[in-house]
Length: 501
Ligand code: MCA
Ligand code: AMP
Image (cartoon, rainbow, N blue to C red; front, side, top):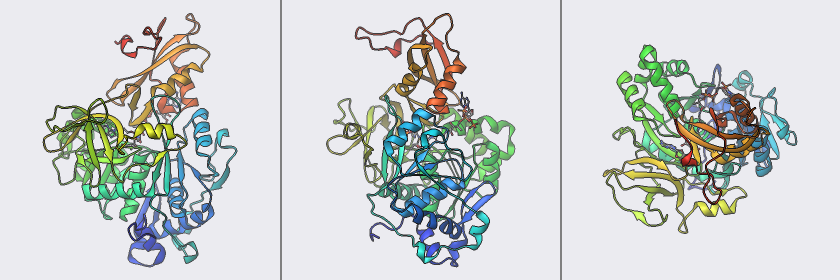
């Protein structure tokens, strides 16, 4: 182990070395009525780590369950990069991810039905027997070792404007760095108990929401699925922090007027954190008015992990994502992508570029895309447009690419949906845009020129088509039919010229 890079999960290492020690019996993970202490987690993950050692890459069928958390911890202990799969992904998306990342194994809970796209992979059943785990201990045979900081920890697929999603290779060093920077910003300790209901195949729910508490030696209670009742229950029973996407906070804001128990529970929380998209000021204000608590925002990206945050000891300013995290260099640049915008005036807009140990290494198998994403001197181009207040608070004001849609906190490329729509026999031409939506932030709208104008495919048919091929969250929420799409002289679709309501 490198002395500069302590184990990713010190509490787990300790519980494994001293299964009767004081930290070993502390709670680590809870999903519904199933939970594991650190000692039990070590006992469950260590043999699995041994099983997958040397496996190249492994896929994890990332349902919101204890099995997923144990699988990812085991992969990290073994030093084998894990590829979390959205269990609702359709065939085309899964097929792409599997052929691109070429895992040798897929880890899934016993009884999970895996789709045909995973048929070629050897399956390892992850049987977490919670009761048996209580009496077993991680033995020294299953020594928990650590691995090189630059070794890949996870490959997380993320949408671009066109084409299929790209696999961001996230090294162990980035995971450790970002979680420690958040610990500093949020005064996050082993005494914190996090509650969340986020999916486990993205950075937010998996790295921040599961690996974060484990790195601190604290615990997480996952709701299985997001519901305000679950949030209220856990926060009133000892949870101290809540992580969510803006859609979740919007739903909380909507529920608050009729739910005094929810207001009381939120008022007790130490920290309410929103991220993955902008939380509208109106929702910030409604939550503050009903609970006396301010939600704080942090800003990150799959490729960069976390870049900025409002600090726990800072001023919680609605509409901003706070200040750069320790170790993160952040600059704004002009249109040319290299000239720095120096002003801190709350007005001068530039693209956010970041540099630091929190960054990914590359897009898997995509040297072209990797090269394009960085400037010559190593700054990562986020594509997010922002201004800075005089005291350094960053306000995100937009996005460079109009073909990226953020819906429910998921990043979705218009191009991948257009391609899927064009594969439908009833579609001649297709364009996809995002429109403002109070609940989802943006909703996906499909503009269709039907192959047969007298019998166009229905909106439900097209939503189902996209959901089956890609994923349900990528389905259009509205379909508009046109005789032709507006195009410029070059034949390129002019999305800004599409008629709006
Ligand atoms: C409806 N459904 C369908 C269809 N229509 N399924 C198949 N085909 C159809 N045509 C199903 C859905 O699968 C779902 O099933 C249910 O109907 C409701 O669908 P939907 O309305 O889409 O879901 P929702 O409940 O409204 O979801 C809202 C949500 C979700 C819970 C907020 O959007 C969410 O979990 N967002 C989190 C995104 C996230 O984690 N982003 C992080 C990436 P069922 O009811 O069974 O589920 S960003 C990131 O990581 C960076 C680093 C960052 O900064 O954080
Ligand atoms: P993803 O690529 O799915 O990891 O999403 C990253 C993108 O989410 C960023 O580039 C931003 O556009 C957006 N994002 C994340 N957090 C915030 C936030 N707090 N406010 C506004 N946008 C955010």
